[in-house]
Length: 522
Image (cartoon, rainbow, N blue to C red; front, side, top):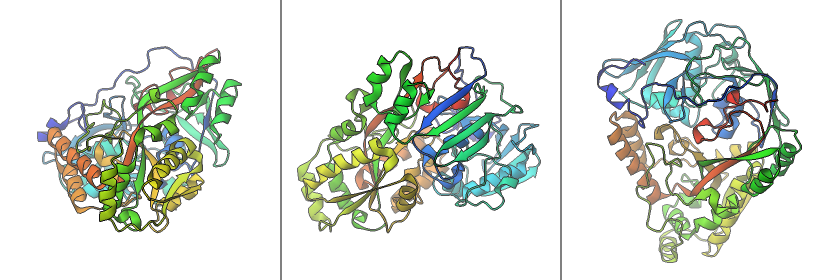
């Protein structure tokens, strides 16, 4: 990566950008071949990652597609499709040069026109795409391999945004007729696998692409070499966790995603399976509608926070205290530069009845039911947390009406401020806090507090890492004053594998990088 001027000072480990040096990740030699069979809990109506803010639904595209940059195992953006990434002397523009001779699955050459079309569509999408729109005034093709990104002001956040899973590059031809809310017909991307089939109520098949042009650096999460060990990757929709567990034990699956901790012993005791536990994976949360309805009242939100006892909520969802922490930070991975507990009230996780009474008295709440959305496919994370929290709230006269629906309906309803008051959710660690979906004003919940917007604008335009951290700590403290969302704790992720699966992901940054996971070796 080329760096000029004072922006060089932000290229430090732990900041939102860093010197692009790949990190070794795969030590063993694994062989290509075979089919990797993966049981998943849910699928989006389309594999297009731009049209949904729900990260679990980005899985298929993360296997088939790539962006200009990716995130390595240290939460650092690294080049993928980009050969170089250069700031102008004044910091007000960035020039990206593409690697040569790259092609899409359709056979079309990757050019800057495809990048411009993909990123301009991404800019107009909800969530993280809006962060890119907020700091850029234009994205233009200079020549076939060169893209100029003009910034409104010098900002360090662009690499982190471009490294996100929604910022994938698709062929401009495949984007015809698509929009930020209308999905593409398929995925014409550059990744190591092509999408052979996609049936939302059944699963997907991805086939190794023989013409994939891999990077040569050591693999590290979504960066460096992608090995494409499996001939095919079969994603099989199995909403019931017990079905995924049983299918793993009987040998119908090689990987069973999103396993409840209750299954740890069963997977440990079976001679052919192994539980994989990834610590500090994500925060379990509830997000409030701050735009309208009863929870637009900040004092009611404060009362709810002080009414909750977090340990029973986490225990109901996770099932074993060894697999979660009562950590209040909105950055779940303590290894992240951005980890902070700024502004957290004393006694996190412990109810304070006096505070509940104080804030309820100051609120306009009259006992009306709070409509709390949960997705039926997320029973552990959504439903069990909501039920436990609602029982605690009812003890203080705060009434909850849990509304359970399939994922597609849940996503649609939570985006409509007239149809919900709260919804269960979860939040991973992001490479840069400007990419945290909850902090975007367009994200469901609609937290548009003027002080928050001003702080986020400063965060996006400030260069020095220490100053940025101080600004984010103010945002974090503000969230713990206004409670647009509440965190219960940080859960580990557990999934199951058959013995012999090669290089399974064991750190949060890897997610499910199935292109670097090998079927059981014979």
